[in-house]
Each structure stands twice: as structure tokens, then as C-alpha cells.
Image (tube, rainbow over all chains, first blue to last red; front, side, top):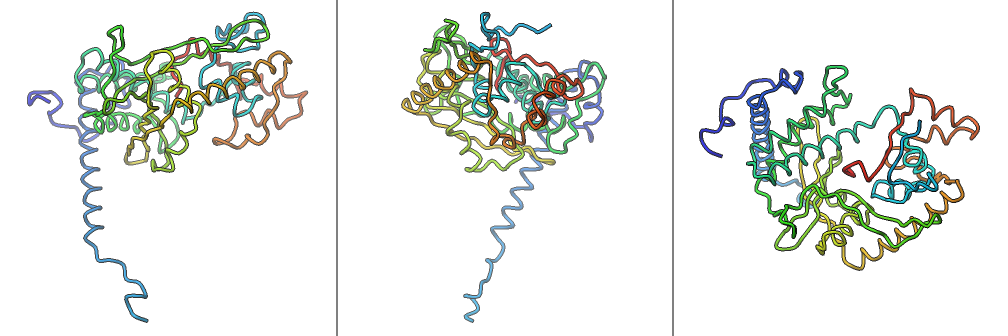
Length: 70
Length: 315
């Protein structure tokens, strides 16, 4: 994606105004903002999933009765 | 006035002569359900939000595929996809968005799932095949003769619509997309083998486009409240499996011929609660003499002609 693409511009906090608007009135710029916002949301989600996975793999193993030699 | 369905016989108007995977699937589920939904052309007044979501998703990704095939960039085609979805999910008569009433499958999760799916596969390993006419193999409608002659003397045909044919590691595959709320694990993909729709696609790709496809690639999207997850599965089909499907289809079409000739479509009362429950169960649960009144109730059912020769897309 080229650095001057409109899709690299700043994103709004909420998409609700776009979703509640008649789509026939949405501009190409509006569509690009929606796409970019959702791509950012995906990045945050994937980062969150990766962090959860890393935390899980670094946690100590689960102990069982065998470990206690009972 | 009953609308004309071009996939039906002009001699026996209750005999379907051109079959797609949706019609075949209805018949295989229950002949009575097939009679109501396809022969009479009736659907519940309140369309399943699963069905609506799936259709909207499909249409949007078709718009993406077409745009890319016409030379658009990934970004441009993604905008085209969401434009399609936003417009098709807007109720023009009421001047408001489609409201599914469901926290999982709604207009927002639809748009999110489209954008996330296209990002997931933006570097797609599947390369669209170019047909012998020089056109990319996207949005392909097909129809071909099937070796069965009905009691009216008319010949059977199979028809439908393929989203895309592509290559993976040099091997050709049909591509299809699905949405679900269930986890897309190995167990999820088991439902596609055997599967009528996937076999129809694979058989058709081979017959119509002379491309010996390996099977169908299923891109499944799990739609959750706060995220969408994706997984790609492969529904292989050998030549022998497709031959078997073809033989089985002959039997099923012959059954449909018999039902239409006799004017009677029996209930399969073991299927009533499959696939989330049959929408016509309330009809079948009643005594035969009152069913016509229930079917005619506009608050419960409405006319919907399923003509596979006109309608695109078996979602």
C-alpha cells in the first residue's frame, strides 16, 4: 500500500454514524474510513490473542497428584 | 397469479427439470419440504437471519472478486465489497439498516467479517484460473444436460453458480465461503464430505469448464460478538466420488419425477428438527384439511420463487 494512500489517515472513534447513514450517501472516503477502522480493530484483536497465547505458554505447568508422590 | 418458474416443466408444472444444489438438498432433506419451498415456492415470512447474513456476505465477496478480476487493487475491491454489503443490508422502504436482532450475526459483524476475511487472505495462495476464453474464473453460472429423461419426455439439467475456480500448488479447486457461529475446527469441516453442494460444485467444474478440480476449498468464518475467526478447509473429491454422486443424483431426480407424476410428495418426519428445525413443521403438524389456510396466511408465509436458472448463488 503506498504511503500516500487515504487509508493510512487517522481513524474515528466510532463507526456508528456511518452505519446509521443511508449507504447511498456514503462517500468513497467514508468507506475507506470504515475499512481502516476495522483493520485496526483486527490488529488489536490479533495482538490480544498473541499476548494471551504467550502468557499461557509461559505459565507453570499444572501439578497433578503424581507430582506430589502421594 | 402464479409466477412462472423457468426451471420447471411446461407440461407438468410441478415437475422441476433444471436442478441446482439447493433444490437437490431440499429434496434430499424431505420431499414435502421440497414441495412447499421449491414446487409451491413458499418461504417463511420472517427469513432466517443466518440465511440473510450468508447471502449478504456472499454478495459482498462476489463484488470483491469481480473488482479484483477487473484490475482493482485490494483496497479498492475491499471498499467495493463493503459498499455492496452496506447497500444490500439497508431497508430502503423503511429507511433504516437491516436489524437481525442477533448479537452474533448483524450488520456490523457482517461488515467486520468481510474486512477481516479479506485481510486474512489478502496474500491469497489461491491463484484465480484464467479460462480458455481469456476471462478469469469468477462468478461462473453454469448449466449442463444430465442423463435423465422425465415422464414428460423432457430432459434433466444441472445448473448453478460458482464463485471462483483457483489453483493451489498448481492444482485446481472450486472456492466457497461459509459463515457460522460454531468453532471452525476439524469437526466443522467434516460436514462437507459427503455434501451435496460441494459435490455439485466439483462435478460442475469438471463437466462445464473441463477443469478436473481436486474438490472445494471452504473458507469458513466464525462470527462472534467481538471478533471473527477464519479457517480454510479442503473438501476433496475423487473422480470415483463424483461418479457416485452423479449416480445418486440420477436416483434422486427419478424420485422427484415420480412425485411430480403422482402429484404427491411424502413427508420425511425424521427430518423435522434437523438444521435448526423445518420452517414448515407447523404446517405438517396440522391435519391435512387445514394446511392450505396456514400456508396462505401472509403473516406466516410468503411467495418466493426459487428458480435456479434465474437466481444466482447457492449460499
